Image (cartoon, rainbow, N blue to C red):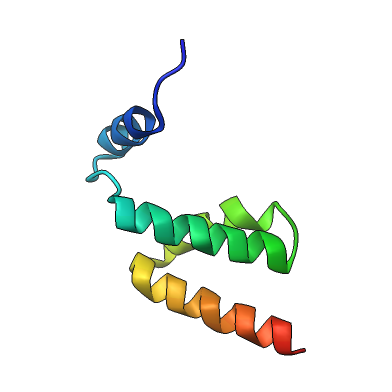
Length: 76
């Protein structure tokens, strides 16, 4: 059985006892994951998202941090 992405995320959020992700948050997280993967290696994408969750920072704060790091690494 295959379910939609939205169903998976909603069900997973329910199991975690939190509200589901908004489309804006999802877009930002996917952007962050892309920055992480392209700056280093693919494994960085999910691990970076895990770090965001552990940090308690908002997706917007994390996005700004990731943009700053991406700029730093492309200037080196």
